[in-house]
Image (cartoon, rainbow, N blue to C red; front, side, top):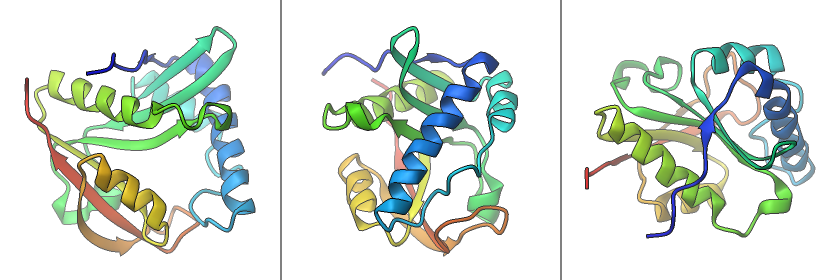
Length: 172
Protein backbone atom coordinates (compact mmCIF):
# COMPACT_ATOMS: atom_id res chain seq x y z
CA UNK A 1 0.00 0.00 0.00
CA UNK A 2 1.41 3.46 -0.89
CA UNK A 3 2.35 5.73 1.98
CA UNK A 4 -0.44 7.72 3.59
CA UNK A 5 -0.87 11.35 2.61
CA UNK A 6 1.38 13.67 4.62
CA UNK A 7 -1.57 15.47 6.17
CA UNK A 8 -1.24 17.55 9.33
CA UNK A 9 -3.87 19.24 11.47
CA UNK A 10 -4.51 22.74 10.16
CA UNK A 11 -4.30 25.80 12.37
CA UNK A 12 -6.21 29.06 12.05
CA UNK A 13 -3.10 30.42 10.28
CA UNK A 14 -3.90 28.01 7.40
CA UNK A 15 -7.44 29.37 6.97
CA UNK A 16 -6.65 31.98 4.32
CA UNK A 17 -4.75 29.47 2.17
CA UNK A 18 -7.58 26.92 2.50
CA UNK A 19 -10.23 29.50 1.56
CA UNK A 20 -8.11 30.69 -1.40
CA UNK A 21 -7.68 27.12 -2.67
CA UNK A 22 -11.42 26.56 -2.38
CA UNK A 23 -12.09 29.76 -4.33
CA UNK A 24 -9.62 28.70 -7.06
CA UNK A 25 -11.40 25.36 -7.38
CA UNK A 26 -14.82 27.03 -7.27
CA UNK A 27 -13.80 29.38 -10.09
CA UNK A 28 -12.65 26.38 -12.14
CA UNK A 29 -15.96 24.60 -11.46
CA UNK A 30 -18.05 27.60 -12.48
CA UNK A 31 -15.92 28.05 -15.59
CA UNK A 32 -16.51 24.40 -16.52
CA UNK A 33 -20.28 24.42 -15.91
CA UNK A 34 -20.11 22.53 -12.59
CA UNK A 35 -22.56 24.05 -10.10
CA UNK A 36 -21.04 22.66 -6.93
CA UNK A 37 -19.05 25.41 -5.19
CA UNK A 38 -19.23 29.16 -5.74
CA UNK A 39 -16.30 31.57 -5.29
CA UNK A 40 -16.40 33.51 -2.03
CA UNK A 41 -19.03 31.38 -0.30
CA UNK A 42 -16.64 29.86 2.27
CA UNK A 43 -14.77 32.71 3.99
CA UNK A 44 -11.44 32.30 5.77
CA UNK A 45 -13.06 33.33 9.08
CA UNK A 46 -15.32 30.25 8.95
CA UNK A 47 -12.37 28.02 8.03
CA UNK A 48 -10.40 29.49 10.96
CA UNK A 49 -13.20 28.60 13.40
CA UNK A 50 -13.32 25.06 12.01
CA UNK A 51 -9.51 24.78 12.18
CA UNK A 52 -9.63 25.87 15.82
CA UNK A 53 -11.88 22.85 16.44
CA UNK A 54 -9.32 20.58 14.71
CA UNK A 55 -11.56 19.80 11.72
CA UNK A 56 -9.19 20.75 8.88
CA UNK A 57 -6.09 18.94 7.67
CA UNK A 58 -3.58 20.29 5.18
CA UNK A 59 -0.85 18.93 2.96
CA UNK A 60 1.96 21.27 1.97
CA UNK A 61 4.73 20.38 -0.46
CA UNK A 62 6.59 23.43 0.81
CA UNK A 63 5.90 25.69 3.81
CA UNK A 64 4.28 28.27 1.53
CA UNK A 65 2.47 26.01 -0.94
CA UNK A 66 -0.87 24.43 -0.01
CA UNK A 67 -1.12 21.21 -2.00
CA UNK A 68 -4.36 19.81 -0.58
CA UNK A 69 -6.83 20.12 2.26
CA UNK A 70 -9.75 18.20 3.74
CA UNK A 71 -12.20 18.66 6.59
CA UNK A 72 -13.41 15.79 8.79
CA UNK A 73 -16.34 16.11 11.19
CA UNK A 74 -18.15 13.49 13.28
CA UNK A 75 -21.76 14.56 12.75
CA UNK A 76 -23.45 16.11 9.72
CA UNK A 77 -27.16 16.70 10.38
CA UNK A 78 -27.40 19.44 7.70
CA UNK A 79 -26.84 16.87 4.96
CA UNK A 80 -27.84 13.56 6.56
CA UNK A 81 -30.88 14.67 8.59
CA UNK A 82 -32.51 11.79 10.45
CA UNK A 83 -29.77 9.43 9.19
CA UNK A 84 -27.05 11.48 10.90
CA UNK A 85 -24.89 9.16 12.99
CA UNK A 86 -21.35 8.90 14.24
CA UNK A 87 -19.15 8.70 11.16
CA UNK A 88 -16.09 10.36 9.70
CA UNK A 89 -17.74 12.88 7.37
CA UNK A 90 -15.40 14.10 4.63
CA UNK A 91 -15.98 17.67 3.47
CA UNK A 92 -14.08 20.04 1.25
CA UNK A 93 -11.57 17.57 -0.14
CA UNK A 94 -9.38 19.77 -2.32
CA UNK A 95 -6.26 19.22 -4.39
CA UNK A 96 -4.56 22.20 -6.00
CA UNK A 97 -5.03 22.06 -9.79
CA UNK A 98 -1.29 21.86 -10.45
CA UNK A 99 -1.19 18.59 -8.46
CA UNK A 100 -4.00 16.80 -10.31
CA UNK A 101 -3.27 13.39 -11.75
CA UNK A 102 -0.96 12.29 -8.94
CA UNK A 103 -3.46 10.10 -7.04
CA UNK A 104 -3.53 12.59 -4.16
CA UNK A 105 -7.31 12.41 -3.78
CA UNK A 106 -7.25 8.68 -3.07
CA UNK A 107 -4.30 9.14 -0.70
CA UNK A 108 -6.28 11.78 1.21
CA UNK A 109 -9.32 9.51 1.33
CA UNK A 110 -7.09 6.77 2.80
CA UNK A 111 -5.79 9.27 5.35
CA UNK A 112 -9.39 10.13 6.27
CA UNK A 113 -10.21 6.43 6.71
CA UNK A 114 -7.15 5.84 8.89
CA UNK A 115 -7.92 8.92 10.99
CA UNK A 116 -11.56 7.90 11.34
CA UNK A 117 -10.64 4.38 12.42
CA UNK A 118 -8.12 5.79 14.92
CA UNK A 119 -11.07 7.61 16.53
CA UNK A 120 -12.91 4.29 16.90
CA UNK A 121 -15.40 5.06 14.11
CA UNK A 122 -15.96 2.52 11.31
CA UNK A 123 -18.14 4.46 8.86
CA UNK A 124 -16.95 7.12 6.40
CA UNK A 125 -19.46 9.43 4.72
CA UNK A 126 -19.43 12.24 2.18
CA UNK A 127 -21.69 14.01 -0.27
CA UNK A 128 -21.26 14.88 -3.92
CA UNK A 129 -23.22 17.02 -6.36
CA UNK A 130 -25.91 14.80 -7.85
CA UNK A 131 -25.30 16.32 -11.29
CA UNK A 132 -21.56 15.54 -11.23
CA UNK A 133 -21.27 11.98 -12.63
CA UNK A 134 -17.47 12.16 -12.78
CA UNK A 135 -17.19 12.82 -9.04
CA UNK A 136 -19.81 10.20 -8.21
CA UNK A 137 -17.92 7.61 -10.27
CA UNK A 138 -14.65 8.62 -8.60
CA UNK A 139 -16.06 8.14 -5.09
CA UNK A 140 -17.64 4.83 -6.11
CA UNK A 141 -14.19 3.69 -7.29
CA UNK A 142 -12.92 4.64 -3.82
CA UNK A 143 -15.40 2.19 -2.26
CA UNK A 144 -18.26 4.55 -1.43
CA UNK A 145 -21.82 3.39 -2.02
CA UNK A 146 -24.62 5.79 -2.83
CA UNK A 147 -27.15 5.90 0.01
CA UNK A 148 -29.64 8.39 -1.42
CA UNK A 149 -30.09 11.66 -3.26
CA UNK A 150 -31.43 14.67 -1.36
CA UNK A 151 -31.90 18.45 -1.56
CA UNK A 152 -28.86 20.56 -0.81
CA UNK A 153 -29.47 22.26 2.56
CA UNK A 154 -30.75 25.83 1.99
CA UNK A 155 -27.74 27.57 3.56
CA UNK A 156 -25.49 26.16 0.81
CA UNK A 157 -25.34 27.23 -2.82
CA UNK A 158 -24.40 25.72 -6.15
CA UNK A 159 -26.09 22.48 -7.11
CA UNK A 160 -29.69 21.81 -6.02
CA UNK A 161 -29.23 18.14 -5.10
CA UNK A 162 -26.52 16.02 -3.53
CA UNK A 163 -25.87 12.31 -3.35
CA UNK A 164 -25.02 10.98 0.10
CA UNK A 165 -22.39 8.25 0.01
CA UNK A 166 -20.76 6.04 2.62
CA UNK A 167 -18.43 3.11 3.11
CA UNK A 168 -17.80 0.72 5.93
CA UNK A 169 -14.23 0.85 7.19
CA UNK A 170 -12.44 -2.27 8.32
CA UNK A 171 -9.68 -2.01 10.93
CA UNK A 172 -6.43 -3.67 9.83
